[in-house]
Length: 123
Image (cartoon, rainbow, N blue to C red; front, top):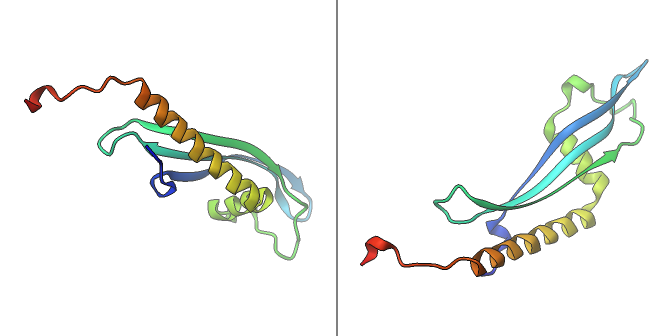
């Protein structure tokens, strides 16, 4: 069984935000904790899925006062863009490739260990 990357659902999330209080800017984000996961449903009608996730943290550069966004005005989309920018496309591509390989490995192990039987009502 070969997994198409289009079949895998990828999601990013922010799991934590580290901040400091700046006298001029207020609350400034310094560190972001993130998770990137890929999951593939075992079967279309099944709640089970194969999953591979990466998580980590990035340290942000000092903010530019000209483009600074107040903490309470930050959006998840904006913060995720900071994470992805800090990680770089090469790192993201590498994680994505590893997610595909891991899910394919999980599929092969799953298929190898199951003794498939005809449906009992199919006779």
